[in-house]
Image (cartoon, rainbow, N blue to C red; front, side, top):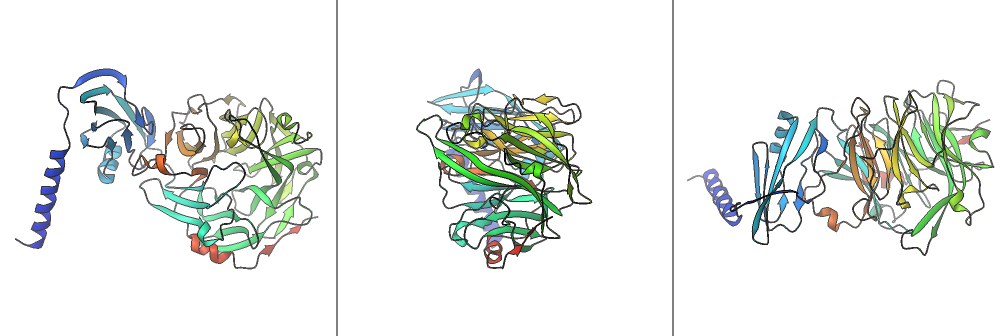
Length: 478
């Protein structure tokens, strides 16, 4: 017998032994109850290119899961799908019925079936996020990772081990394009790390006229400009167990940086001393800057009176000129993080009772505005009773991803939501993991998720090397 046949025989023996150790259902009790699985993948809409939705049945000694013509028997309560079989299932089906039978306390029970609805609108294939401890006012051991959502490959874009444990802010691509993106590394020797097709540059966007360096930013569709806020951020620890932290700005203005000319474009309307302006973003056509603004109040004693409105101001991308008329779009609650879908049809934003840091507001929800009609959808199918925020769109405007603390109120995890052609949002689902119990063990929040159409052409070592470069300076325009 040759070596190849020996390996085949060993593999067959292993499979036989494995199957012998995994009980199969017998004397099954039928139930109309829904099975409790984690993550909650019941009756969700999923893209055809998503990685396997592996899940665990809590408390189960053994399970049998049937999806289409695929059957999984597991002796540990974990349902794990082979990637090849999984992607074949998705390619061949629009609706998949999932049957779960579980052994608990010596009794096999067949639970009520649920479905997976497969759509041909694909997700952008990569997702980046910041892994951060959900501390009250400190951070430690930050990483920025990129993950392929079609499988389970993950890569480091920034790592505290290589950057003297400095703070790293969110990584954002331009129009979901991996060839153009930017992230911040704070502290001495830090700066904005600009990625242009794998070539990294270090920028110092702060000028003496600004109250602080750039904080929240977004690219224009052309990639020539970023619009950003300059914020003085103050964290305040509270005694309440329900409200541990409040974060607010004592100063904040909005500017535009011309990345080609190294010029800061400004307007008195975006740096009014009587107002706080923050969270800017461009419209896809480059004609508007959307942002949030609040009148100043006495801080910290009146921080609950900070109510941010959603507004916009024209921008001439061809001339690099900010307009002169501010339009108010929404004032009912305090607004944060407006993001316009790439097709220009919808604007997604978070709302909360007050303030400017929704990730620490349990009541923070996502709302969506139809930019043609002004109609607002409160997205009841999307939101939970915990913080739902830090959202971004896919390049085809059919998906958005957001960070939700719905599991335990403390750790944020990335959830994907499908928005169909009628503008209707569907039940969201959590980023799949190869081992679904990993969320029980990882003591990090997945912060500020951003989608991209491809893998970034750099890694954490490249970022560490870029930090050694001299910073390119900007000048305050006339």
